[in-house]
Length: 165
Image 1: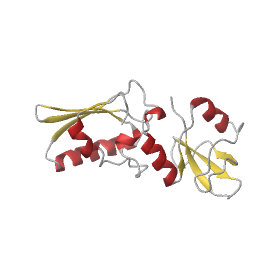
Image 2: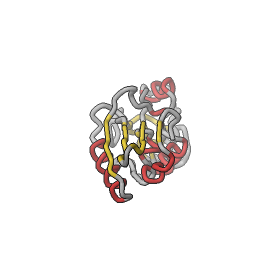
Image 3: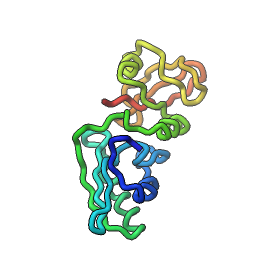
Image 4: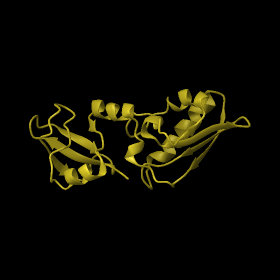
């Protein structure tokens, strides 16, 4: 869970059951989109931040959060907050590991990300064989937050989750 999130501990097991609809191996806690979750006067107040402005998954995430808390017997009120903006730094270590096992290379730091996306350095690790002998195929992968890479050793294509700061 991200350090700057303000979440009541008893709500974590419910939030941890809500997956990111675009990357189902990650929970919304792994992604770091939950900024606030408190039980106040029998209503769970939740604040979420999109991974990027206009992210189409946020409506689905809000619906899934509502359904999870309704199933657990809670009323819920969800607000979308845009500031501060979400960053890939908020992805948990467990989330980064899950991304890699799922076949998506986790984000590098900002400087390394630029070098990789400009094709200057071979530093994105292949999620299939672990080689760094990879090349950028497209700045855009299966979603706007990913780029498409290919391993030059095993020839497998894979997504790389771009660094967002």
